[in-house]
Each structure stands twice: as C-alpha cells, then as structure tokens.
Length: 591
Image (cartoon, rainbow, N blue to C red):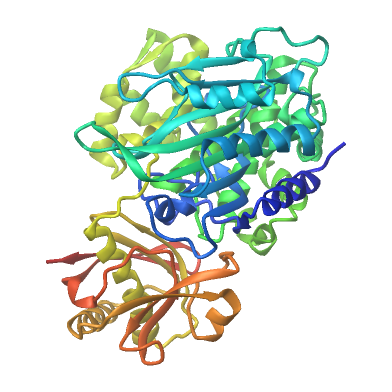
C-alpha cells in the first residue's frame, strides 16, 4: 500500500529532478482572484504569474494544494467526488509546453508509479470555430505508446477562460481503468464510468478578450492538476476515494455515533460519505489561516450550508444528539500534517458546536413546515424564503427535500425575495461560484497598493505593532482587509487611519520591488501575512524613498502602482467583526 506522504514525496521529488521548484500549500481563501470564493485549483496562488509577472522561484513550479469545490456537490457521496481535496500541480510559466508536459506526466505514471499503460487512456481537444483540433497532443501520446484506440477527441477538452476574459486553451485528460475484475476494452469510451479521470494538463496558449475574440498568448503556460485522493484510490486498488486510509477512521466514528454500518445499505452509505466529506471541508475552512466562520455571506454561507447539510444527513442516519464536533476531532487528528488545524482546534470546535445548536433549534420545526407547504406539489419562492429566514434552511436543502418528494420550487421568485432581504448575489446563493483570473487593471493595482498603506496605518494609529494581515480580497471596485484586533475601532480612529494613508499618498512615495530569500526578507523588516507559508525566495514591495527609509515593506506578489501619488483619495467604507479577535475594513480609492 502507498500512503499519502509517500505519494507526495514521489511527485515532488520527480518534478524537482525536472528542475521545478516547490511552492507552499496556501490558504483556501484566494488572495489574487476576487471572482471565486475558494481556492479551487493549485493555479489560484499563481494568478499574477500566469498573466506574465515573473515568479521569484523561476518558470518551473510544483506543489500539492488544498482545494474546495462546490459545483459538484450533488455528486459527493459517489465513488470519486469530494468537496475538499488535495491537488498535485506542476507549472510551466512560459517555459516548456505540450511535449515536455505530456512526457513528464507519462513518465511519472509509468516509470515512477509503475501504472500499466494497458490501463491508461487520454482525451484531447477536438477543435471548434475558435481553435483547431489538438493533433499535436494526440501525436505525442501516440509516440509514447498510447494506442490510437485509447485516444479520443472531445470538444469539452478546453480550459477557460475562467472568467469572461483571459488566458485559456486546450487540455488533455488522463483516465485509468478502475475495474479490477476485468480487463479494459480495446477502445476508450470516456462515458464509461469505469474510466476514472485523474489528471489534466492544460495548455494556456490563447487569450480571450471582451469582444469574444481569441488571440495567441505571448507567454504560453502549462497548468496541470491531479487529484491526490483519486490517485491513492488507483494505486491502492480501492473502489472509492472513501476507502482510502484517510477516510477509514472518520467513517468508523460515524458508524459508532449513528449505529449504522458503512457499505451495508446504499442510502446509509451515501449519507455517511457526505457527512465525512462535508465535515472534512468544514474543518479545513474553519481552520484556515484566514479566519472564516458561518454566516449568510460569501465563504461563510458556503460553510453554513455544508454544516447544515451535514446535520440533515445525520438526522437521516437517526443521529439525534450533537455529533459534528466528535467527528471533527478525528478529522483534525488524521490531518496532523496541516498544523493550522491543531492551532485553530478551539475555534473549529466552538464554531461547529454553535452552528449545530443553532440549526437544531429550528430543524424539526422547519421540516414540519416543509411538509405542510409541499402538499401542493409546488413551493412558492416566498415559502422557500420563509424556510431560509425563519428556520435557517439554505435554499439548497429545500431543493434537496423537494427533489426527494418530486416537487418543484419557484426559484425565480425565491431569488427576488432573497435579493430584497440579503446583500448576497445569486451566484453565492446557488452555490455556483464563477471562477476566473483576477484582472490586472489599474483600479486593482491602486487598491492592492492601498492595502499596504492601510496595513501600516493600523499599526501606527492604533499603536500596536502586533497587528498582522489576516487576509485580503481585492476587486476593481473595493478592497477588503482583515486584521487581528480585540475591539471595534472608533470613528476617530478610522478618520485618523484615513488621514494617515492620504498623507502618504500626497507624499508621492515610490514603490519598488526586490527578491530576497525568505529568512533575509524577514530580517530586513519585511512584513508577511500571519500563518501563511511562503516560498524560499520571495518578492518584497517597499513604499518609501529607499529600502532603509521606508513607510511599508511587505512580502507580496503584486500587482502595484509605481508611486503613491497615483492612488487618488483613500476612503474607508466600513469596519466590522468577522471572527473572534479579527476585524475587517472595506475601503475604496477615488480619483
């Protein structure tokens, strides 16, 4: 049997031999992509570098990244889908392209992991009006020994752009025949469920503009992603991802609490898997270095939705008492390699317990109300919103209950009601999160630079050098900055912070960038986000006349303006609490 740590070691060491540099596993809350709530792939921390900015560690990178995806939530509980998962990735930032990327993938699979070529198949892009058929990738696979019958062309083999515009291109996907009871068929059919897709090599060679036109990128990138849990399933000849080493203790704990047996009853088995998956995701969101707690907005809404869906499936298993914290403790223990979970153990348990108590108070009444309003085979939008507002039912739970009864919901009316009462977009409420590369606009550069000044202003005005960044989110419209502080800021303090920033803007201070080894960077006075893992070589942005006479000096990936006088006027819109000991400021810059 191969373990998680052994597989990670093999992957990282293989690509290091291919001159890749390892980058750290970063937060689940992406800093460089405001269009997506969670890190859904290893590329999110690399957004600026995929757009052309130079990476301190060079053009070849590798890592394993923790990810959250909710778009497949309805499939969680089957053999291969997970909400939280770990993803292997290797990248070329304008260096090697299709030939080397495919050859590296093939060599790792067949030479390092000793996977039989007889069990492999691949798909390539079939072409459309915007880009030609990817014959090159198919020919490379053919030259490596993949039979012609095991190579198919599919139009869906195209990645991006993740937003409306940006880098995109064809991809090639790798599949493994997972049925150990019989040999794979000679001809590959990607619709056969026995073929498990596990690795994807994306070739970013095009750029799509706002006029829906495609042009060749100056810098062609390779962006790959392979599911760690799926690969463990393959290598250990398991039937599902839930049968791998990590999930076994978690499932045993659920069996103990529910007194139900895993793999005995189809419905119970699905419920057990969903509880294991969702609570794992919840633990990692709560334990992240950028503190998140349940709420009705953004990441907090997704977290609340996952916790409450877990509790409902617990009820389906007959669990009446509180159970989420018992399972969470097992998850934390089994995830010991992520030290932030142990550091945030108390916060994780407190938040789960509080949310479970809150939902349990209204769950039975909400289920009773649902049964009353569902007799007419149609639930109005106002009735669905009542279940959310008065009984705490996220719309997704109401939809699941309705599907089980074969009835419909007036979602259009629900969304109107929801918008009227909550400042939450339809995107977040439906759980469909549009991902995409952050823009590199001048507005974004200004706000990114302004966060550096705000960070220092907080320490100066509040006279607390222990204040650290706990997270940020920047769109072209506003900045959002989280920091540690024990109380609400006064109106006077907020005005002083505004004035401090605007004075530095008027001073017309230059902004410079340099690269230093991490230890030397901290020794030079550079600030970093608390709890974040940085690579061995980092970029430092300094605001000030010189690197010795500066206002702000921070480890950051950019982008930034070249002088503070480009920023305009800084204005704070709101200051609020987001977690115990964590405050948030929202601000803008005006011309």
